[in-house]
Length: 424
Ligand code: S3P
Image 1 (tube, protein in one colour):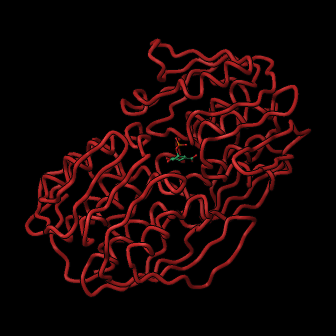
Image 2 (image 1 turned 120 degrees about the vertical axis):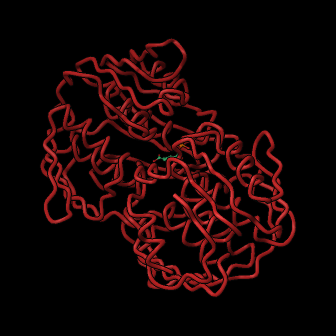
Image 3 (image 1 turned 180 degrees about the vertical axis):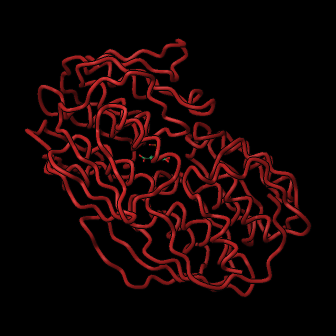
């Protein structure tokens, strides 16, 4: 798909539902008693993978008038799938579901696409095995396909070496089936959607500083869930509004949970004209409408505890830094290398191809801003966040930017290109 420069972006956007919250709503709804009603569910390929997996395990999930109804069968109601569970491109499906599958009374196999099957799974296999789980990487390389045979699980306290909500959640979800209190301490706090949502389903969960603790519950109770707009999807329009001349974009109903909203702090630190309107709190998952206007930006340093709160936004933040005066440094973000692609590598290669000054480092990037961009051919390696980032780069560059495999945006934002077009 080809992108050329746009003179301005004006209008309103309603971004699709939060991906992390949508996955969890289906998973926890499947394990609950009664029906869980999900409003604002993200119908992206990743979350549809989660729905299909739970349907394969006997859960009835239907859609009526844009609402998803999950007819839960209780903590012990899943049935063994007759074939491999296809997790597609979704790391969240794979890692969180593994935690659940360890506590079942059947064997299952999870496998995904080439990207997913090359992502590291030892990070969940290690703690789940410590709990007594039988979880095997079938190719012996620490990646999916994973074979999981349910076993009685022991509660553990896990000191996670990595700030990852997927690792934390896998352990906490296995903890629902364990023989006592399970807790996870992270080096830096990651997104806390699992803790918040498990609590709303009636599970005894506590969070203290960087430690989350769960007690095995009698049952989960079906809920009505309103999924906020995904800040990770809003990020492309935040950056587009800031760097495209003469722009003003109102992005409505964006989730601004503090464990996710690091991009807003970074934009403010860089001098962004960004206003929060209509701020609401909903069971710990606050939302706001965000008004962004073209801004004169300066560089910043992004490191330390803020990194997990903006990890998925770093590709588009790197683009933002190309439009700021001075040198922006991103550190402590080595996790970028094991996302849907090696995002340090891809961002540095393709931004440089467009004329930006970017030096990749082992844990981030150094970006000298304020050098004009020109079009290039972008091979996004089927990484949705790379495709969306370079669409925003392309509308702010001379010449043509051609994004190969741009249809991968369907993973998290199927209508992204249409929404971008509407703003012109
Ligand atoms: C997610 C956690 C993050 C994030 C991913 C979604 C989640 O991954 O990058 O897109 O829903 O828990 P890590 O936990 O591996 O950092």
